[in-house]
Image 1 (cartoon, rainbow, N blue to C red):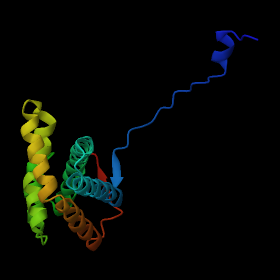
Image 2 (image 1 turned 45 degrees about the vertical axis):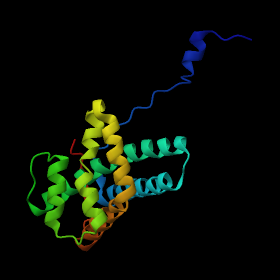
Image 3 (image 1 turned 120 degrees about the vertical axis):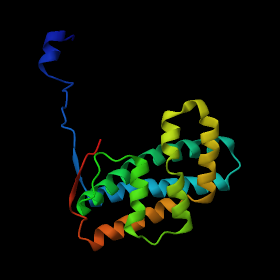
Length: 176
């Protein structure tokens, strides 16, 4: 038995689900996302170091590239929120400004954390400068082999700061 298209359309078998964009998020959720990305950066960096399989190494580089971008975005938004809390907000601060501002919180930074912060701007280069992608890839490998655990240290400091100041259930706005 064949059904006509008109009859099938009445059943609305492919409903379109409309979603409103989410423009706020609790700091605890942002910190969970930061931790996830930091963990993946570190895990895939360790896997990269432990294998001789070039295909697996390329996969690790691809994953770290993507997670570095996500890490940089949420890091910037968290620092922006903390600056707003201090009354030191600059209109839509850049990643560079956020990195410099992170140092004003007087966190005890590990050497890996300091190095990771210094190299975090690589995210901008990877995202915007594909002409020099081989150079950027070499720098990414350097980060992966020398300071990937610094991403975890950054998460740890930000989470401790937010817990100590009762900010975990506060909402941050989308800064984009």
